[in-house]
Length: 198
Ligand SMILES: Nc1nc2c(c(=O)[nH]1)N(C=O)[C@@H](CNc1ccc(C(=O)N[C@@H](CCC(=O)O)C(=O)O)cc1)CN2
Ligand SMILES: Nc1ncnc2c1ncn2[C@@H]1O[C@H](COP(=O)(O)OP(=O)(O)OP(=O)(O)O)[C@@H](O)[C@H]1O
Image 1 (cartoon, rainbow, N blue to C red):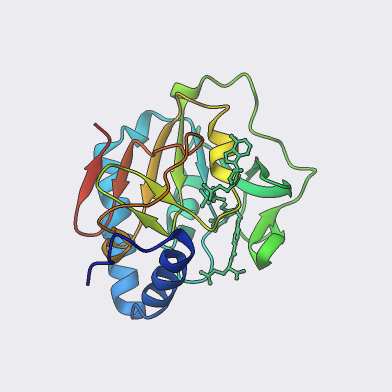
Image 2: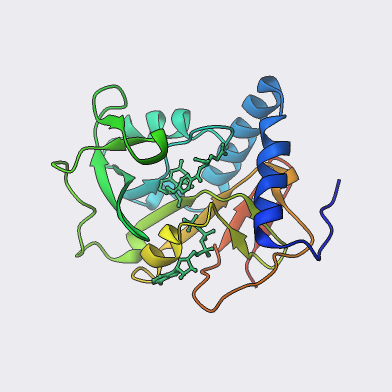
């Protein structure tokens, strides 16, 4: 079902959370696998030495298997987000899923602050970021939970490849109230399609 285009952002957030929470586990597992298989084929993932990826929670597209597999790839560094203030998050390296994470903001597993921060001197083109979100449209606009964390972080990394992942039901006709600070992912990958930024 498509969402009417005149809804405001907070209605869209509520609506998408509701339909995403209703996705059966079996479908969600299948979708997650399809999405990350596609990513490994289309993004040049193999050449990226630094992967920045959210740790999934609630009914988000699961990243747990992707992270675990990436942790076992020689020569790759994996970083996950830690909320550190209003609109501020940073990415820290993890080496292990079971000991590297503790419950943080919103109950999302986060790295400890003593971990290694994603270094400033890594060129953006050597990194790939997996971006979460609630709703997206065909022009690659994105609506997240509303904290402004990704827009703020990505403003500092304009050339990093940004791959958003979502269930296909999270793609809506049009994201309303797009702001100048909103940063579009380069690619959105769902279990049914790949949308590339023009
Ligand atoms: N997995 C994950 N980690 C992330 C983000 C994200 O979107 N997903 N973030 C992206 O910025 C930052 C955390 N920002 C967040 C801001 C608000 C809410 C929030 O309002 N959560 C709802 C529950 C939503 C649901 O059930 O789906 C809540 O607590 O009511 C969550 C995370 C950094 N880490
Ligand atoms: N580059 C930035 N610097 C400072 N504040 C910003 C920046 N980008 C966005 N913000 C602030 O964050 C607020 C929330 O932004 P928005 O509604 O786009 O969040 P979102 O993309 O849904 O959330 P998230 O990025 O956390 O998933 C905006 O009102 C804006 O004031």
